[in-house]
Amino acid sequence: MGNYVLEMKNINKKFASVYALEGVNLQLKKGEVHALLGENGAGKSTLIKVLGGIYKADDGQIFVAGKPVVIQSVREAQALGINIVHQEIVLVPHISVAENIFLGREPVTKTGLKDKKKMYQEAEKLVKQLGLNIDVKKDVYYLTIAQQQLVEIIKAVSFNSQIIVMDEPTSSLAEREVDYLFEVINKLKKQKVSIIYISHKLNELFSITDRITVMRDGKYVDTKETKTTSIDELIKMMVGRDLTEYYSRGEHTIGEKALEVKDLSRKGKLENVSFYIKKGEIVGFAGLVGAGRSEIMQGVFGVSPIDSGEIYLDGKKVKFKNVQDAIDHGVALIPEDRKKEGLVLKNTVGYNITLTVQDQYKKFVYVNRKKRDDIIHKYIKAFSIKTPSAEQLVNKLSGGNQQKIVLAKWLATNPKVLILDEPTRGVDVGAKSEIYKIIDQLAGEGMAVILISSELTEIINMCDRIYVVAQGQITGELNREDFNQEKIMYHATGGK
Image (cartoon, one colour):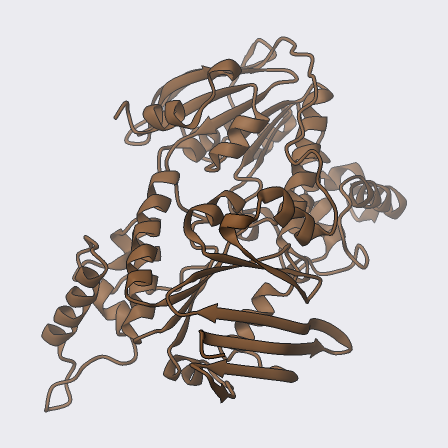
């Protein structure tokens, strides 16, 4: 036990009569980056909440620096040097970086007033300690998502943390920003801070972690040295079987142009954007965070206004007045943020699946319940949505199942062109594989599919062509034989 800064032994946690954790073990060495891996619902979040004092374990022991401890609150965890950087950024936008770092524990003068000068000095010291370039007096609102993520890490370090949990820290970051985050993690390692790193992006783990612990169905599976394992082995441990075709790509018959966009512009956002996609084709849109990929598709779909440009569907010029107009013409957009824009989380699976097609089963006050149920059960079965029933609240399901419900909701409209904005963000490896199969199947049936993704491996393995976007412009177009990460990043950085 002397080698470990943290040891969690035989941790059990029940909710009602169901085990969320059963006999789970985790051992963390001083100064290591240790990945915690598993599908959504594997128990990772529950285990971290036990460690962070949000939940109390029913059974098992926790040792910190070799001493047994009982953690019953977040404050108790922080007092032991344990802090969690959550996936959802929880900073206060309209106060400074320094005020966010020391929120609720601001230094005070002898007269009891807030000592802003000292607070800024202490914040600056922490920023320099990690070799960062962030203005501590600037409001968080003006920072990029990547900078906000780093502020969360600085905040955790400010508690003198010996153990920092990072939950999906790169889910909103572009490739170049991920490299910057990894530099910060390596600096923390050198300072002997131990990090538990949770991510669904398997490639990342081989760049930054020392060991990987895999969980499945609330149970401990195994711990592997990163350098001695492989993606295939990790996937098999996570899902309990081989995923022989992780990226699904069949042979598609490419047809005529389904959608063509010419010189789409919006002041300050987009400049002369032109592209096309054919029936049966999967076309990727790559670029750094903030490049304008989502803005292009929002302009096409009628979410955001455009100043100029032309849109053609099946060779005919169209102009969408609003989102409903785009849907009526056979275009569907699955948004980047499924929780805020894609789902009504506190409503049922059935309600969400049929939200876009109520006109198919409802006339005035009359509801054709059989038709409605047929639509719901068709998509639950087709997409293997894991739910106890159609009446299950969506917020009780895993991220992968939620994403499949968003897909079902829009596919129920029978679109000709399907736009997917980050469709596998925050989704586990098994659900990703299922979503790739759905995308491939749709293209095989002749649908035109646009895939926006920050994961270059996803874009490269799934697409027929790739457009690269930088600063609201298309800076490159690549055919499949020319795909590689270096070329994509070259165009994504404006040829730098």
